[in-house]
Length: 446
Image 1 (spheres, rainbow, N blue to C red):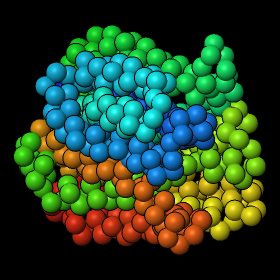
Image 2: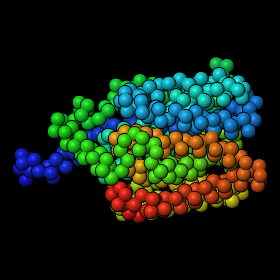
Image 3: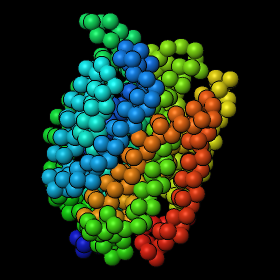
Image 4: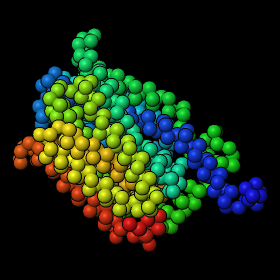
């Protein structure tokens, strides 16, 4: 039956061929995208591991640390859209490799920081170097994977964030414990080793990725044609029902609304991540090192499970919006309870597990909304705009949390993060109105 359908050019045969090609793409491309995201997240999160030792060595204050942690995001956001436009111009393979190589080198240069000023300079350069990576990776996936696979693919891609802590946490802790080796502080070893590893991965992916099915030598001609046809059909649908050209991606108010939702998600992410190792260290009554690194990996291991389970539930039920709202509310409860339960370390750690699992698992669901709405040039520009707005949270969150702690007392910053997360859940619920099916049928009703 299958052979007969293929000979007649019937749609089911083409669909089967496209599915087979997409399966191959997941096996060939996702491991490398995942590895890149692991290092992308680790080169951001390792600052949290270095925090105490870094401040003790350089004399940088809490306010300077919060400002330096956040200024990365301002630089990142300022270059994000141009970077993603250039990615579309030069191809994802070259541009993503360029981003990885340059940010790895700059991250390694953190080992030379010795004052607040040099800290700010390196953080700005790191933001410029990394700008465009995440929306570029999302755009790359829209060129390879049809909408019916996107939540699952994004869920697997988001393994990168928790895996960077599951493996990177102990690695960072181990390198911090190497304090004094060859005359270097442990935090210097950490930035040097992890930065150079990121650059090495960038060199490898330059020779590994393919920009589209049409350029993949490991697909048969039939598979390449079938998958390209499915992607092209979705692009035509988005051109008819959603934003498609470059300016539409930048000026569409619905894109700005989605960007604000992502901003609120990232407020919680950055507000937790930059302080998580230090927070776990306080719960354990230990300095940040190998032991704290191992314990810090526990919430991220929970996030890996959530990245498997939550997108799968959303796909099985067809209710991405409802599942995303529930996940955000669970995250809000977890981050707030991690403060309330601080006197009971095990309970506080459990709450952190819920918080981290929540803000990681909701993101692959969130990205299915703009990815389904935006096509063509609008996808490159619009996805970058959404991520740019979200990136600004990286500057706001540390200062917002510090302000709440100073104004209302220790622990208030976590409650503040919980409030903004609840607001994000409400805004996701309202996408049932903002992104109506008749505006873009690709967006499923909640």
